[in-house]
Amino acid sequence: MIPISPNFNKEHFKRIKEEISPIESLDSFLVALGNNLSRLTKIPSEFRERRIINEFFADKDFSHEILPAIKHFVLSTEKLFDTEIFPFKEHSKAISEEETDSISANSALYATTERGIFVRHWSFSREQVACLIANMMYCSLGFVFTVPFDVVSGFDRYWRNLGYPQTASHMNMVINYLKLCYFSPSFLKDSTPVTVSRGMLSDDQYLSILSSMKENSKPLTKVKFLSEGGIGHPKTPVDVEIDFANRCIGFGPFSTQEEILFGTTPEACIAPLVSTALSDSEACFIGGVTHIGEGIGYGQSYKYKGIHSDISSIWEEMIKARGMGEILVSPTSSIPKTVARHSSFMCVDAKCYLGRDTLGDQVKDMDRELKKFLCGLLLCPPREGDSIGSIGTGAWGCGVFRGNKHFKLCLQVLAMSHCMVRETQYFTFSDKSITSDWTEWVSKKNISTINKLFNVLCKYREYVKEGGRKDIFEFE
Image 1 (cartoon, rainbow, N blue to C red):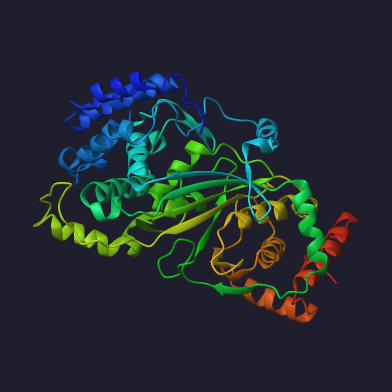
Image 2: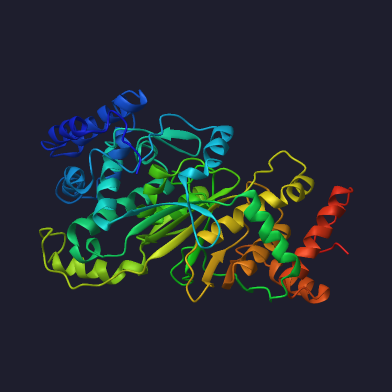
């Protein structure tokens, strides 16, 4: 547990209570929200996007359906958390890579696990998470924290970008999440905690793994290539979903793979409150979260599709309990107990190769990428014995970061095989050739075991170091 910042104390809670209690409309809420933002980020308190915000809420009953949920959970925060000790770091500024590496090198901040890595762990009840999400909507946590490209104090990045359809999609899912928490006791009282774990794999630990790979003749993990579905898609459920993360993990308004994953799963958005920028030796694991909504598309084309099938039965029960149309019921209404399916995210940030000699630099960074992915996998809880269940992944770091899909696939398979992943679901999306490319290559080279794949990667690294530029699947 980490001591709270000076401005996050009982006096802070007292002021928040006094300010939010009399709010009864969207207009008065936005005035108070703007005041919260101006205190923390020095942004003018008046929203220039007021017209866009009003249009977004035109078909929603903010005063009777959304505002009561926000107020209820904001006002419940003090009783659910110890106000003397609070489990959040104060993110008063963006942390540089050098500072992050220095912090991460201090293993005294971590506990050693049986799987051989250092781990820090946070656990929250469903009601605590709802309180945090409501405070993020109201920007009332009393400190600012870092997400990619910005320092924010909550969902202000959503509020300020509601004119973009993809941002409106993410906001819809946060609203539906708060409604579900407020009007569905069975969802809120689910005893499964939401967890955030941050792990660090030391150089000595990593070298020990490499040494074992050289002699490990166990078979490679099974790779199932899928052209339909995707990470977080209801038709392709897996035990662990890979977040193609930024160093500062978390949500955002523009629907990258990571922003979509966090956008559809609002509970995961509390992770930036406790996890600052990742170093090259670190990864993050988020467990016990629930997909609230579904979307379609990517980036600027991303749009909200509807309620995710993981909560469809609970959502239907909530609607029935509310009676006809949009008539609401009290938060204490009796609703049949149904437990939603929980999801887990493994957050790993790949290196960016924009404007660089991608192949040479990527091979040079092989240890960094392999170590990062191993760290993430070692954070995943085993399902059967020491093995991990199913994992959903894809072309990690191969979009705007310009990674090589074939090389990154080899690194992922090697890491997953070492960590005994039972099944890998690799989503190909528009890349129709990678399935046959991989199958033909491992068959031709007789690459069926961990040590064989490891040795090929080591030889390929030497080949590229000497000036070779063939793709790994073409390398002899």
